[in-house]
Image (cartoon, rainbow, N blue to C red; front, side):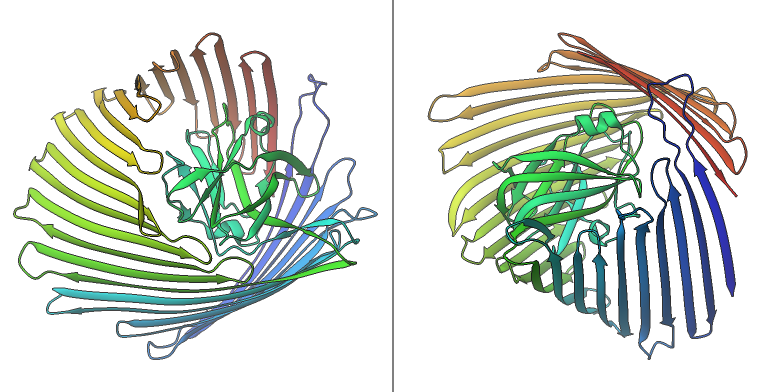
Length: 632
């Protein structure tokens, strides 16, 4: 048995010598309690918390949450049961109130495994209301899954399969005046997020936390050491979309909010994307009561697509981690009476099976098949079929050959069917522990209603070597030729890259890279040639745990620019740390950026953090922040 109560208080300090800063002194209290009991096959947990926030000029805001769970862990021959209940409230004491909402949910699941077979069922019912927006919501969902895995003949034959069924129903009611437009969140079966190196050809990973309704939890983080574009996507199954709303925890940097740029993409399969011609308008709204910021992306016309993705270009400076908790995909509905009531339904069936065979020594065969049928009540029924076959031969421990064929077909209701095919042959050769080589040939085709649209051939090679114990290098080369039958265009490109890393001393690490690419486009209006070259070098110096210095310089021939950055970190003790950084970009004008921060953990309960940022391009911008936190 365990019982725990914890109280914390947090305050923010501002410079008295800087009157240009607006005065704000938020203070918050947080109390938590939990109770758990377990013994043998019985387990029970209860928990709750209440937080209160108070900011100068605003009324007190209160958040409350209660949760309980019950689970069994009986012998293997008995099923495993789990039951959950949760309820939350958010309100303030203003008159009239600016926040007044509640929600509760009931969950249950049953799991049973026997031999190589496993079954699982879960059900959920949730409801809630927002008195400020005059809205109510009821939702139910069911999911049943069956998995199996078997092997025969001393694992020479392995077979696995999985089948899953999902059913969801969501009813939203909003009270409004006749003729007004109301935004209602669409039900989406899947949400995705990740960092795209190429937003045109990429497949993002699922992120269920983006749609779990928890606006306090972090679903996606964008840190200052990530130098890639952030993408967030959803499977909409051609439901109407008029607005995308994202909830950011805390207060994103002012410069971040000003520089953030979003681009809209659509896809039929979550792999091949294209830019949408629908324009979007960005606007930020602050929620001062619960200290959140919402980003609204308003579309200038209704979008109807199977998959929709928003790509956020990397801003010039992200000094603090940016945290996203939720993403809502909304459609606009015009009220014809004093309320709008909409019910959305969704059904989905998935099945997949895999077979792996080893008929002879060093020979491996594989085959897989997957079927997916989605039926949204307000969208288009979508049927997807995926199949792949592979063979591998490994004559020795240092040499292997592989061949593979895959096909993906998407059939959407009242739409043209799309098919993608891919053939590939590859080999891997590792003659020495310090030398590895690889070669691959690939052909891909895209068809619409069995009519070929484009075909691409690709060849690539890689050579990696450990030249000395502290010196490694790699060389990569590729060639591709793509033909588009619709516009009679052929594109041929080739590229190579070289990079090397050397540990000059235990405290000094040096790395360099060189990239070159050339492209020739043959089309009706004439040929076009283009090329690119960029290179860079970085030096990391770490003489001790106290001091670390990172320097990098890069050159881009297309932009005709040189960039340089330097960062110095001091860790004087486990309680006192500081960081200084500067970056410059030399083009027609010089862009400068400087950053300094200090973190001081005075005690286990008290900490102080200060940071200063300054940047100069066409105009100069600077900011200062100080934060002090104390827990007791």
